[in-house]
Image (cartoon, rainbow, N blue to C red; front, top):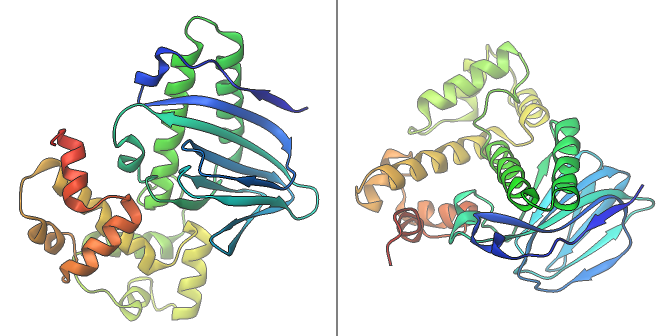
Length: 273
């Protein structure tokens, strides 16, 4: 059954994030999304659809999702019968979306805990439709928690999503211990007990949704964020301590994943002008 709600927005604009619309079990038709200024999350529940951005198609099979920051136009269309859920939201706290690693123009993700996502979306819907007093605040808190969880999955540094596989545990432990150094696939294969490079990459992708080198890159970005938040060391030193031996490469990838330059990110965290 289709459930859609567009709550009235008042003082919720001061919250870190606030829900502006939500739809559950929506049979998606083709739509053109202009630069709406509102971020949205798409959850592919059944069937397959695609999102076209700047001429490129991003396929969303069941069990996957997509984040769009509202600053980029796109076309959303089904490939057959496509059931999806969606949520649109605003950010009241400056830089909130960027600090959650969702400041990029868009990104796709896997719904590793699909039942949990369905439950949270229904709780958000109930909050904005059934609770007139505290519903908006509860919906905001639930949405923020969902964004934090998705962010952790994008970083690939959480352990709860990694199956108990000795080879995978060895690979991730090796990367976590050595991400500041140059790591080759050959070294990862040795750490995993002698796997072939092809099998290692396939196993890692099946388990985490990304390749080993992407995981390592995200791990380095995560470390850089911590240094920028907790220290005042120069940006060049942050890059080096995070495993980036080329400052330009660090700047390029930090902006790609965070949506801000390292300096702008540090200023957003500390409230600097």
